[in-house]
Each structure stands twice: as C-alpha cells, then as structure tokens.
Length: 330
Image 1 (cartoon, rainbow, N blue to C red):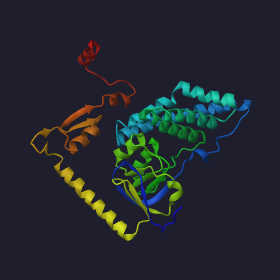
Image 2 (cartoon, rainbow, N blue to C red):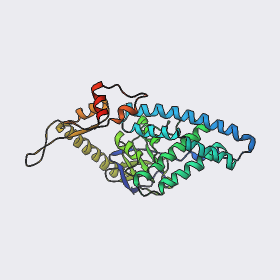
Image 3 (cartoon, rainbow, N blue to C red):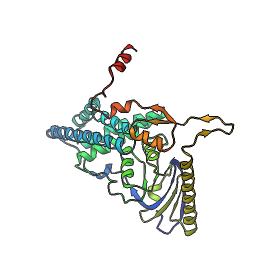
Image 4 (cartoon, rainbow, N blue to C red):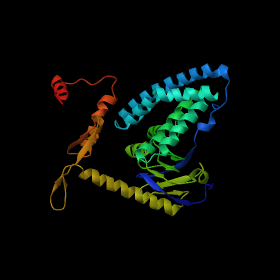
C-alpha cells in the first residue's frame, strides 16, 4: 500500500466521464462484517424464518421509498432499477429457496441469504448476454441489503461519506450510487465495473467521474492519500505533485469553458456544414426530464417513456375514454 507521499498514476477504463479530486475514502464490502452467518438447530428454524419475513418486509418498504426518491431527485427511468429490486424481494420462489436453505442446511437466515443470492449471482455471471450478467450486481446489492436488515443495521455504509471525497471500492452497486449523489462525491475509482451496469448508468446520470478496471486498487491506496481523477482520460494520479496538480486545474478550467460554450449554443439550430438542419430530440419520462430537455435546447421529444407513468403509481393513470377505446380496438 502506498503512503501519502508516493506519487502514482493509475490507468483503467472510463465508466463515467468528468474530472474530480479529493481525499480518498476506501469502501470495503460489509457482507462479512456482520455476525449473521452461523448454524442452527431444529428449534431455531421458525424464529429464523420469522426474522427473514421481518427483514423482507423492511427491505420492501425501503426499496419503495428509494424508487420514489430516485424518480424525484435523479431520473425516472433509473427508478425502474429499484422497482425491479422490489419485485425480486417480493418473489415467492426466491423466498422459498432461502427458506429451504434454512430448513435443509440448518443455517441462519443470513447464511441462507448469502448462499442463495451468491448462487443466483454466479448464474447471471455465467450467462452470455451482457444485460443478463449485469443482473449479478442486482443480486449482490439485494443480498447486502437483506443481510444488513437481518443484522438490524439501518444506515448505509456510505451515509457518512465525507463530501467531496474520491471513493475507492471494489465495485459500485446501484444503491451505493444513490448515496454518492446525495453526499456529492468528487469521483470514484473501482477495481471492477462495466460501462453497461446500473451503477455506471447512475454515475453518468448524476455526473460522477468514474474510472474502473483498476485491479488491486484496495491494496494499493490508503485513506491518507489524495487523488486527481481524469475520467475523460481513464486515469487517476494518487498523491500528485505540484506540477501535476497545476495541469489538472487547467484541465478543469478548459472543461468548464467548453461546457459553457456548448450551453450557450444549445438553443441554436443544429446544422451540418452543408446547411442541413438536424432535429435534436429528447428522451423523457416525466416533467423534470422535460424541463432539462428544454434548458438544453431540445427541439422536441424523440422518445417518451410511457412505462414511467405506471411505475410511479399504485394504480393505472387516468385516461380519456376515447384513448381507451382506441387501445381496445388495437
């Protein structure tokens, strides 16, 4: 592990562009910190199953609230990630598999959750389709939530992340990224990460610079270190010298000027060099998306995500009778 005086440059892959700097905050997997993994006897089966029921109920409530907050504060489409997590938590077959593990192996609810969810995580990881492999992160995220609930832990491990920190972690899960948005992290450096993962999508949505594919990172850096993160160039400098810091500050200034110029031109027509006008259309799912599209000079809506109207409600939205009749005819 480097000390706080050794300068080091790391190169990886960009998950989310941008520039950020700050004191390093090392985030380690909390799954093995809980005293929730133990054997039981026949007399403890029912109490363990009741603990599981209570934990599932609490997580379901938490996910419902989280989905609403993500929709209101970050992005309506990304809130669908947590609606999907909620559906998984309420899946009867998944619960039955955990209960079977408790009864058949005589292990605690926490041990059963870890075993069953890892089994599903590995199944997804072995699939050919990238979108299926990304679901392994969802299973890991849910397992961590459930084990935390069984242990009576209510606060997320990132709830106390110092504002402006550079997060160093093995990977980011969807719920982690929500806390990074709330605490205004400066950037993130990860050992593992895929550009199509839910966490990467969240990072890009909240403007969090993020570089992944940095193996051995947790053993390389310490919380006493300072980092400059150039996610545009997929690099990070640990404990930079004065020259490197000056160069980085100039990059920030140049990037700020480039963004300002782009925003100043946003409401002008998009034209090719031969004079052909190009319509810039937005992808929207709610009023906030529409507001942002207008601010950034969109000419109209290219894709309206109708499913968001349903995901954010307990009951179907009201509709005009003529619209309903037309739908029924088709």
